[in-house]
Image (cartoon, rainbow, N blue to C red; front, top):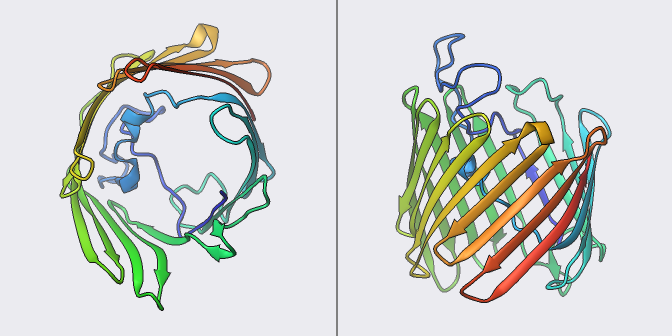
Length: 301
């Protein structure tokens, strides 16, 4: 289904201590101040970017930048396990890409092949949310409100806060509060991230479970990541290992993974120079469930 999301501030830099244009460090040497820690959802991004994204069926994505403020994309997906669909995605950002430090509103919208813009069911809204985020010089605060209903006295609220406390250390937390007619409660999760010269360790722990990740850049071509997740609700624990290998001479990137559920997968991305397109081929095997999933995709733009 489609969705529309309004943000009060544009995302700043990624949660990566390895910028391309200067030595890796969390310390801003220009004025001696700590940098912004990024978003709470991006704490594990370094590790997650190493793992391959599951590919199934045939997919084509066409991206088009109409201006520095307006971007659109078309996605065509032919699937054997789910209904084939088409999605139209649009982003409007009231700021140019060069002003990364300036807060500005962003509007993101999607429409699927059935013409649905908002996620609805029987002519009623199923879900909608509002999110606002503020980024200071060395901290990030965000609040999300989902499905508020005054008549039914129900709401879901999520609050995030991150603070850079040293050149290498970031601390913060997440508070999830939900209220309905039958129940009311909250879950507090604490988070921390420590960055080394070429590695990042991150952990989240709370009543709902724990999530730990470790990212290591071996060299310019090879990156590895390890993830551990435990859930108190599902009583499940998973362990995953992923790696990324860059082959710049061949314009190729390969990502592979292996986890404790006996799932092995890999995705190969080939940049079709000089065309502005990338060919994506992937395969995932579930040995425990005796299932095979393969996919082919093209990303244009």
